[in-house]
Amino acid sequence: MLIKTQNICKSFANKTENTNNSNVNEVLKNISVEIEKGKITTIMGASGVGKSTLLYILGTLEMPDSGSITLNVNEKIYDYSNLSEKELSFIRNKHIGFIFQFHHLLPEFSVIENIMMPQLILGDSMKNSEQKALELMKKIGIEKIKNQKPNEISGGEQQRAAIARALINSPDIIFADEPTGNLDSKNSDTVIELIKEINSSMNITFVIATHSNEIAMQSDKIIKMQDGRIV
Image 1 (cartoon, rainbow, N blue to C red):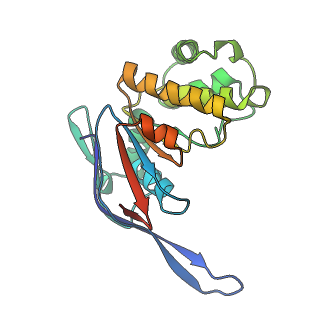
Image 2 (cartoon, one colour):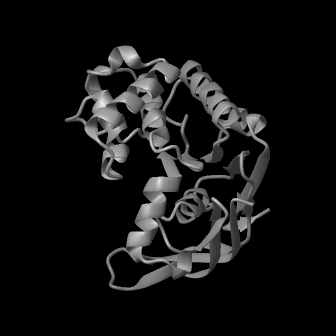
Image 3 (cartoon, rainbow, N blue to C red):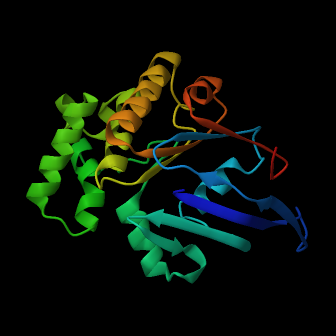
């Protein structure tokens, strides 16, 4: 098992309008899930059920209020609660990739520079990072736009660039939050096929929070959420 959670709980305080009072919104309620290595898992449910929060906690971007999370990579088990922020950051950069609904490409950099960024952060050389980025761009079919800025390319190309950026450090797992939510049906189909191909050819695990039945139908496992719980 790549990731295992037990009894994850997470709440956020919402300030009441026009007052200093706040009420607690319990977003995740005793969530226990297992993410299997090499599989595509989708997390489904209506808006506000906690899909994205669970995704961010699994990916170390958020910490739970209680419960445990373990990541098992390279025959080593990491318990999130026992790790410092620096150690979590290393795991995030080395073992985890992220794809969001909005691509979050940096507008001042070219497409290839955006894709290279995580590799450079890990300390690799400019030459190696550029070579690996170009190989990924060729695999994904976007090498022709390598020198363009994000605002000069289409939404589908932006999302494929974001997928290449998520792949650059050869992660064990990629978390995707509504990866087709901002795309038309043609580009959505392209992204879904790309995720399937990457999963199959590179054995990379995917966990996808989505409303899309099309993505769910292509996944190995569906986790359905309602009111902060697994149903």
